[in-house]
Length: 343
Image (tube, rainbow, N blue to C red; front, side, top):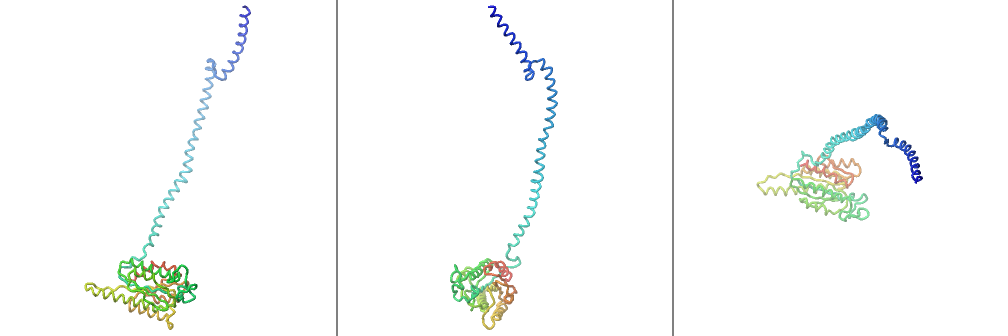
């Protein structure tokens, strides 16, 4: 009994006394400071003075970086690249737009405002069917294949050049039909001879006549072309005058007589004086029948002699010339103006 009571008392007294005294004193002081007397007197007094003085002083000085970010972004991107150039570009576009629009609208009117187009008129179109229209090598009589005939063109039209001539004549009839006036159309074809094909037709009838023109080939006779147009215009005028005379309550106002001569060169017949014969007929048409003659001349090269001859046929020294047959359609607006101003 005595040994049992003595041995437990000796072992616990040495072990607990040595371990707890060293361990608690080392660990709590560094980590948690559990002893109130030590922690409250030394630790609190040192920590507040060090932490507040350094930590607060650094954060207030660090926040300026947020202020640098907003000031940096707007000043480099918004004012210099986005705002200023966009405003200038818009101002430039707004100032340039009206000038472009005005320039595009200026060429729209095809007829001069000072020219009237409400006067009645009779128009004769003389269409050249000579061999030079479809070939430079032969007279193209009968449109022989190989020398005159083009592919994908009917036998009656023969070649692309004559197709362009027919297309241009149709274009003029269609365009002139829009004039607010009474008008008639006559069609004359010419080569070695001139022939009156139709007389006093409406625009629809004239379009059908032009479409059915059959290419003949041959040489060029301007004198008979002008003579046949004189005859058609005189007959039209006489018929109109008699019709008005039948209506006693109406005063006759003679319509204007106009001739459009479509050709690709100077005349080659009649043999004695082809140019003189054409000039004589043109003079008679202008003076005796008051015909306003408008030459349309197709020539791939500049020919001063031919142009001078065409001006001699013209009623006002004007010649409407192109360098190829396909360009005939570009004359439409100029010819409409010419007809309108001749009324």
